[in-house]
Length: 94
Image 1 (cartoon, rainbow, N blue to C red):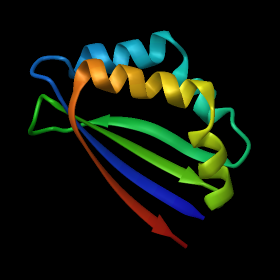
Image 2 (cartoon, one colour; image 1 turned 60 degrees about the horizontal axis):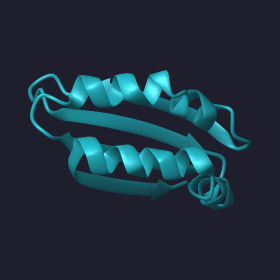
Image 3 (cartoon, rainbow, N blue to C red; image 1 turned 135 degrees about the vertical axis):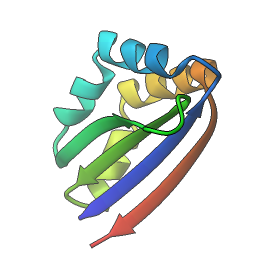
């Protein structure tokens, strides 16, 4: 099992718009529908209005690799360029 904790530090005041755009384009649902996806959920940081967290759980490393090759993953990267200042990724294998 692969677990990814992703922290997005968004441009000031852009966190909600970033998540709204992800949802409007169905990028979250496309990721959840992928083979090997167990969990794909976003959370707001309580103490920082510009931080968005993403918790991902996948069956294995191959599922993550396949996810990273999907067109919606590429689109997500384009949105990050528009809305995000910094991304931190923590990856755990079980």
